[in-house]
Length: 264
Image (cartoon, rainbow, N blue to C red; front, side, top):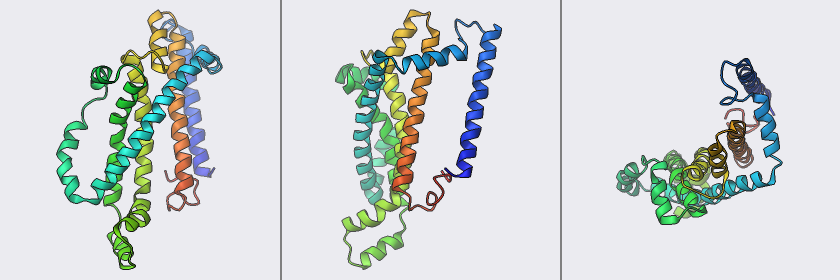
């Protein structure tokens, strides 16, 4: 880990610690009723307890399963469409109006439709994830394909490479940083949508389902906060894994080579 990255991690840790201390003081002082805003120390203790509670971990795994399936499907579909639309100006122009019409639809507004068509189980969550998380990957892939150096493609063609060979050896490597960025953004969106679908869609499994069950009792705000923190930790862990994968597979990029990824 480089010096710059260590400094950022240290500043982030100090900021989180300061936030926790302030929250602890506010709760303990009585400024805010501890019933609604429990002390940080109590919430963190609940986090540790939940992380070793099998029944809770089963719900987390249900959410991660829907997230993983949705990400695989939306990545495959969005990258393929992005490559097609990014390689063909005509196809992009023809589909742009449809994309701009569909893209702004909030995923939460589609929950009733998804429940009607797909039920309340993993199919509903995966469908919403695919719809919501595909857009960052799609647009980043298109922009990445548009950003490919035309001279590099002409050079490949001059050496006798066909369209597919040029796409594989020139266009896709050039667009890869854009695609990875889209995947990282979509991963966070997919996790949010998965939990939201469980929360609002009447799912019988998952972290969102667990949160709505706990909050419905009305007297375990410490568990609600602990569950929210664990959801945040999941998002942080997913982003960290994808960042490591990006540095591993795109180490040849100037922004990543020899820097441990500090430029990102």
